[in-house]
Image (cartoon, rainbow, N blue to C red; front, side, top):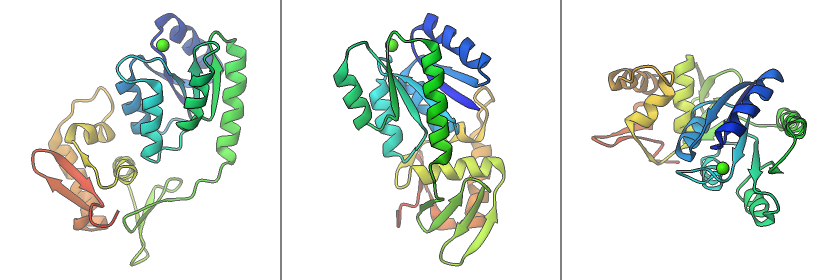
Length: 223
Ligand code: CA
Protein backbone atom coordinates (compact mmCIF):
# COMPACT_ATOMS: atom_id res chain seq x y z
CA UNK A 1 0.00 0.00 0.00
CA UNK A 2 1.17 3.46 -0.84
CA UNK A 3 1.32 6.25 1.74
CA UNK A 4 2.01 9.95 1.50
CA UNK A 5 4.18 11.31 4.30
CA UNK A 6 3.99 15.12 4.46
CA UNK A 7 6.60 16.30 6.97
CA UNK A 8 9.18 19.07 6.67
CA UNK A 9 11.46 17.87 9.47
CA UNK A 10 13.97 15.95 7.33
CA UNK A 11 15.37 13.88 10.20
CA UNK A 12 11.89 12.83 11.35
CA UNK A 13 10.59 12.10 7.85
CA UNK A 14 13.71 10.08 7.00
CA UNK A 15 13.28 7.97 10.09
CA UNK A 16 9.53 7.51 9.57
CA UNK A 17 10.01 6.63 5.94
CA UNK A 18 12.46 3.85 6.84
CA UNK A 19 10.17 2.45 9.51
CA UNK A 20 7.07 2.64 7.29
CA UNK A 21 8.90 0.93 4.45
CA UNK A 22 10.06 -1.79 6.82
CA UNK A 23 6.41 -2.22 7.80
CA UNK A 24 5.62 -2.93 4.14
CA UNK A 25 4.38 0.43 2.84
CA UNK A 26 5.53 2.24 -0.28
CA UNK A 27 6.15 5.82 0.88
CA UNK A 28 6.18 9.13 -1.02
CA UNK A 29 7.50 12.11 0.93
CA UNK A 30 6.49 15.77 0.61
CA UNK A 31 8.35 18.41 2.63
CA UNK A 32 6.18 21.35 1.61
CA UNK A 33 2.43 22.04 1.69
CA UNK A 34 1.72 22.87 -1.96
CA UNK A 35 3.58 19.73 -3.09
CA UNK A 36 1.73 17.65 -0.52
CA UNK A 37 -1.63 18.96 -1.73
CA UNK A 38 -0.77 18.24 -5.35
CA UNK A 39 0.53 14.73 -4.63
CA UNK A 40 -2.51 13.90 -2.50
CA UNK A 41 -4.78 14.97 -5.35
CA UNK A 42 -2.84 13.14 -7.99
CA UNK A 43 -2.21 9.76 -6.45
CA UNK A 44 -4.69 7.34 -4.88
CA UNK A 45 -2.86 6.95 -1.54
CA UNK A 46 -4.16 4.43 0.96
CA UNK A 47 -3.56 7.00 3.72
CA UNK A 48 -1.71 10.25 4.45
CA UNK A 49 0.43 11.18 7.46
CA UNK A 50 0.15 14.96 7.51
CA UNK A 51 2.21 17.32 9.66
CA UNK A 52 0.14 20.43 10.35
CA UNK A 53 3.19 22.71 10.53
CA UNK A 54 4.27 22.57 6.89
CA UNK A 55 5.96 25.45 5.04
CA UNK A 56 4.30 26.89 1.93
CA UNK A 57 0.76 25.82 2.84
CA UNK A 58 -0.23 24.57 6.27
CA UNK A 59 -1.29 20.97 6.71
CA UNK A 60 -4.67 22.22 7.89
CA UNK A 61 -5.21 24.17 4.67
CA UNK A 62 -4.05 21.21 2.59
CA UNK A 63 -6.54 18.95 4.37
CA UNK A 64 -9.39 21.46 3.96
CA UNK A 65 -8.70 21.68 0.24
CA UNK A 66 -8.67 17.90 -0.19
CA UNK A 67 -11.97 17.55 1.63
CA UNK A 68 -13.55 20.47 -0.26
CA UNK A 69 -12.59 18.64 -3.48
CA UNK A 70 -14.22 15.44 -2.24
CA UNK A 71 -10.96 13.57 -1.64
CA UNK A 72 -11.81 10.95 1.01
CA UNK A 73 -8.25 9.66 1.66
CA UNK A 74 -7.78 8.69 5.35
CA UNK A 75 -5.58 11.33 7.02
CA UNK A 76 -3.65 11.08 10.27
CA UNK A 77 -2.40 14.48 11.39
CA UNK A 78 0.76 15.14 13.38
CA UNK A 79 0.28 17.98 15.85
CA UNK A 80 2.55 19.87 18.20
CA UNK A 81 2.59 18.49 21.71
CA UNK A 82 -0.22 19.74 23.96
CA UNK A 83 -1.73 21.87 21.21
CA UNK A 84 -5.31 20.74 21.78
CA UNK A 85 -6.70 23.45 19.53
CA UNK A 86 -4.70 21.96 16.63
CA UNK A 87 -6.44 18.64 17.19
CA UNK A 88 -9.86 20.30 17.22
CA UNK A 89 -9.08 22.30 14.07
CA UNK A 90 -7.69 19.16 12.45
CA UNK A 91 -10.81 17.10 13.11
CA UNK A 92 -13.01 19.96 11.92
CA UNK A 93 -10.99 20.05 8.70
CA UNK A 94 -11.62 16.34 8.16
CA UNK A 95 -8.77 14.47 9.86
CA UNK A 96 -9.44 10.83 10.77
CA UNK A 97 -6.90 10.54 13.58
CA UNK A 98 -4.01 12.43 15.16
CA UNK A 99 -0.76 11.93 17.00
CA UNK A 100 0.94 14.58 19.16
CA UNK A 101 4.69 15.01 18.72
CA UNK A 102 6.85 13.41 19.94
CA UNK A 103 5.40 9.94 19.46
CA UNK A 104 6.58 6.36 19.26
CA UNK A 105 6.71 4.98 15.73
CA UNK A 106 5.00 1.82 17.00
CA UNK A 107 1.97 3.94 17.90
CA UNK A 108 1.94 5.60 14.49
CA UNK A 109 2.01 2.18 12.81
CA UNK A 110 -0.78 0.83 15.02
CA UNK A 111 -2.95 3.89 14.34
CA UNK A 112 -2.29 3.71 10.60
CA UNK A 113 -3.25 0.04 10.50
CA UNK A 114 -6.48 0.81 12.36
CA UNK A 115 -7.21 3.67 9.98
CA UNK A 116 -6.62 1.46 6.94
CA UNK A 117 -8.91 -1.24 8.31
CA UNK A 118 -11.64 1.35 8.81
CA UNK A 119 -10.92 2.81 5.39
CA UNK A 120 -11.37 -0.54 3.69
CA UNK A 121 -14.60 -1.19 5.57
CA UNK A 122 -15.94 2.26 4.73
CA UNK A 123 -18.37 1.98 1.82
CA UNK A 124 -17.46 4.39 -0.92
CA UNK A 125 -19.97 4.48 -3.69
CA UNK A 126 -19.11 5.54 -7.20
CA UNK A 127 -18.30 9.18 -7.83
CA UNK A 128 -21.28 10.93 -9.49
CA UNK A 129 -20.84 14.34 -11.12
CA UNK A 130 -22.36 16.12 -14.09
CA UNK A 131 -24.45 13.18 -15.26
CA UNK A 132 -21.52 10.78 -15.13
CA UNK A 133 -20.74 7.97 -12.74
CA UNK A 134 -17.19 6.75 -12.22
CA UNK A 135 -16.58 3.32 -10.72
CA UNK A 136 -13.15 3.47 -9.09
CA UNK A 137 -12.92 -0.31 -8.71
CA UNK A 138 -13.55 -1.24 -12.34
CA UNK A 139 -12.21 2.08 -13.77
CA UNK A 140 -15.31 2.43 -15.95
CA UNK A 141 -17.50 5.48 -16.56
CA UNK A 142 -21.26 5.38 -17.06
CA UNK A 143 -23.34 8.08 -18.72
CA UNK A 144 -26.43 8.23 -16.51
CA UNK A 145 -28.77 9.59 -19.21
CA UNK A 146 -28.12 6.73 -21.66
CA UNK A 147 -26.87 4.08 -19.21
CA UNK A 148 -23.89 3.47 -21.50
CA UNK A 149 -20.71 2.24 -19.83
CA UNK A 150 -17.22 2.98 -21.12
CA UNK A 151 -14.01 1.26 -20.09
CA UNK A 152 -11.16 3.70 -19.52
CA UNK A 153 -7.41 3.30 -19.83
CA UNK A 154 -5.38 3.99 -16.67
CA UNK A 155 -4.52 7.50 -17.83
CA UNK A 156 -8.07 8.32 -18.95
CA UNK A 157 -9.31 7.12 -15.57
CA UNK A 158 -6.86 9.27 -13.58
CA UNK A 159 -7.64 12.32 -15.67
CA UNK A 160 -11.43 11.86 -15.46
CA UNK A 161 -11.31 11.19 -11.72
CA UNK A 162 -9.39 14.42 -11.25
CA UNK A 163 -11.93 16.34 -13.35
CA UNK A 164 -14.83 14.80 -11.41
CA UNK A 165 -13.26 15.78 -8.10
CA UNK A 166 -12.92 19.38 -9.29
CA UNK A 167 -16.09 20.16 -11.26
CA UNK A 168 -16.83 23.69 -12.41
CA UNK A 169 -13.27 24.90 -11.79
CA UNK A 170 -10.69 26.10 -14.29
CA UNK A 171 -7.90 23.52 -14.21
CA UNK A 172 -4.62 24.55 -15.76
CA UNK A 173 -2.86 22.38 -18.31
CA UNK A 174 0.16 21.93 -16.08
CA UNK A 175 -2.04 20.77 -13.23
CA UNK A 176 -3.86 18.30 -15.45
CA UNK A 177 -0.63 17.12 -17.04
CA UNK A 178 0.35 15.86 -13.60
CA UNK A 179 -2.52 13.37 -13.90
CA UNK A 180 -1.36 12.12 -17.26
CA UNK A 181 2.37 11.75 -16.72
CA UNK A 182 4.61 10.33 -14.07
CA UNK A 183 6.08 12.99 -11.84
CA UNK A 184 9.48 13.04 -13.53
CA UNK A 185 8.29 12.53 -17.10
CA UNK A 186 8.53 15.39 -19.52
CA UNK A 187 5.24 17.23 -19.74
CA UNK A 188 3.94 17.86 -23.20
CA UNK A 189 0.56 19.62 -23.39
CA UNK A 190 -0.20 18.07 -26.81
CA UNK A 191 -0.41 14.66 -25.17
CA UNK A 192 -2.80 16.09 -22.57
CA UNK A 193 -5.04 17.34 -25.39
CA UNK A 194 -5.04 13.88 -26.95
CA UNK A 195 -6.35 12.38 -23.70
CA UNK A 196 -8.93 15.13 -23.22
CA UNK A 197 -10.24 14.55 -26.74
CA UNK A 198 -10.47 10.82 -26.09
CA UNK A 199 -12.60 11.50 -23.01
CA UNK A 200 -14.78 13.88 -25.03
CA UNK A 201 -15.30 11.30 -27.77
CA UNK A 202 -16.31 8.65 -25.27
CA UNK A 203 -18.39 10.72 -22.90
CA UNK A 204 -19.62 13.79 -24.77
CA UNK A 205 -17.92 16.88 -26.19
CA UNK A 206 -19.70 19.37 -23.95
CA UNK A 207 -18.42 17.74 -20.77
CA UNK A 208 -14.97 19.36 -20.89
CA UNK A 209 -14.85 22.99 -22.00
CA UNK A 210 -11.61 24.59 -23.23
CA UNK A 211 -10.71 27.98 -21.77
CA UNK A 212 -8.11 29.33 -24.11
CA UNK A 213 -4.91 30.31 -22.32
CA UNK A 214 -6.29 29.10 -18.96
CA UNK A 215 -7.00 25.40 -19.18
CA UNK A 216 -10.16 23.30 -19.00
CA UNK A 217 -13.43 23.19 -17.04
CA UNK A 218 -15.31 19.95 -16.41
CA UNK A 219 -19.09 19.80 -15.99
CA UNK A 220 -19.49 23.56 -15.93
CA UNK A 221 -23.02 23.35 -17.35
CA UNK A 222 -24.54 21.09 -14.76
CA UNK A 223 -22.20 20.33 -11.88
CA1 CA B 1 6.67 20.81 10.74
